[in-house]
Length: 406
Image (cartoon, rainbow, N blue to C red; front, top):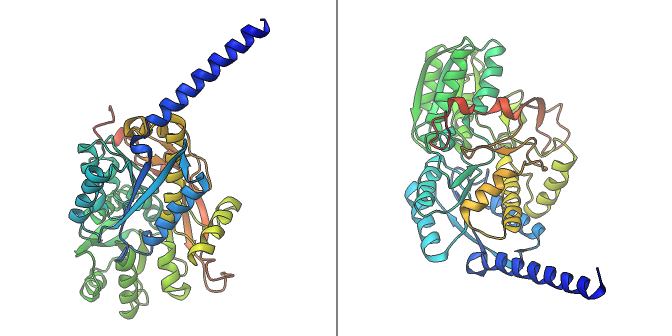
């Protein structure tokens, strides 16, 4: 090739690349990538996600460089107050008036189910990081959201199975009376019965609840070996404190916390929670990568992160990478791009997004350390075993999701 031909070819290639880049940038709507962070910022679930989750999201944006393909990233934030109506109306306003491209956070399952319906109606995109109900990617699945951190299926598959295997085969369930509690109750019942155990009784309490006296008395009267707590956040903390005041464990029954977060254990202390089995999607001290990110988070927040807060960073980074590679913020293309790429970062191992929107990844069975075993304020868990991603979550063969062809 002559010099002139080489120069011409190079010029055409550069022009084509410039045109493609310009096209890609033009496909980012409004000249900005707009993210809405919706969570409980003031109530029962504040500490497990809340302002700390927003800080994790901001860390991801800063680490990404603050822009995508030259377009700035803007964040909106709101408190859903654990109300499905407040959450749905907030997101409807974000979509209609502010052209928000992706909604992050999403904690209470009832809020997430309402919000994802709004996103489906308006062709938006949501990444659910805080909610637990496995129905979010089962009967409530949509093509417009992804469920990232965990759900009730692996919580039951991990903790309930481990407790039954250790001889705890007679259960009483204390359940939060809304979508999350119902889903966890159903998943735990299935696992207990499939492994030879029996549910001898249960009671559902309003969400949230501060006085657990009557419910703990019913649990004591059931005669069950295990009192399973199918609730979360401050409800779980209040239930455990009441059980302690009523001497539930001293009378021979055992508590099983089916959704316990790091901040719960830290708040209650090791004297009250030692040896408690739990299932988690991540732990800040599980390896060098987790520790490195967690120490940066701690410097900003003054607390070690929960699995939800770490998952918000992980999912936001995966989303931004997908927008950069696709050159667009179109929700359909971005969801597809995110599903094409495996997830292996400081948070998720062996992660992949299935057609039902479930991001499956390795989960972990952990045990709370005793005061004697702990070496510091946040040295709270011992990881006992890994539950491989393929075994942790509901198999697609059992899915009721409309996106899954069974």
